[in-house]
Length: 219
Ligand SMILES: [Zn+2]
Ligand SMILES: [Zn+2]
Image (cartoon, rainbow, N blue to C red; front, side, top):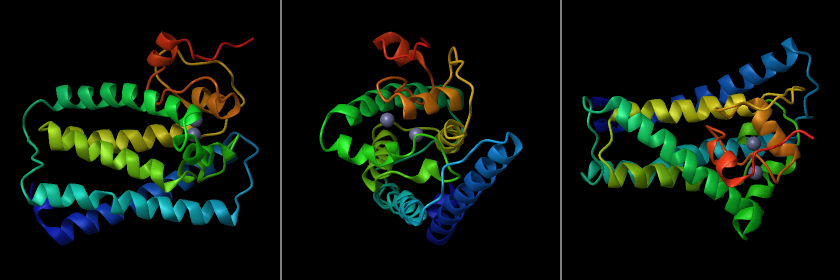
């Protein structure tokens, strides 16, 4: 992978992509709330500062992965198993993040980290980026470990990262709807989690909430 081999291209691309995703998050969330006339949570200086820290953490967490790649410990394929590797990442992370999220609600110190994200019961344009740095670092390191132990298709890996971000943006769009989704997580599903923290722990799908009985039931 030419892009990954070239140090300046790699870090330049990574920084640009993170800034672009951050700006797109603001534009999408702001436009969504304006178009649908949703009341948004007041943006605080603390939120803005927190979001800058998270963007920085999302970039810096790639350092161990970059050196593991340079040293040949992490290797990607470019042609094989695109769909298989993508499905593996999607469903494996769906389960792992469900379990980690559950742990983050009940076990110290994960609970302490996760409380920051739950300071928002409904959303402003950067709610996705309001979290403890430990949480974004943990996700980055899990991704790195995945690439270390499994030789993944690089395009599956990149598409998964972008999809993870996109689903994060969707999950933090304001809504007054309460109709829960049948299979894939969305803004209704995740906003319900922010308001009823004992349900809807899933991220990409609602499968594990249904399996473990934490799927939100409208009373
Ligand atoms: Zn939570
Ligand atoms: Zn959230």
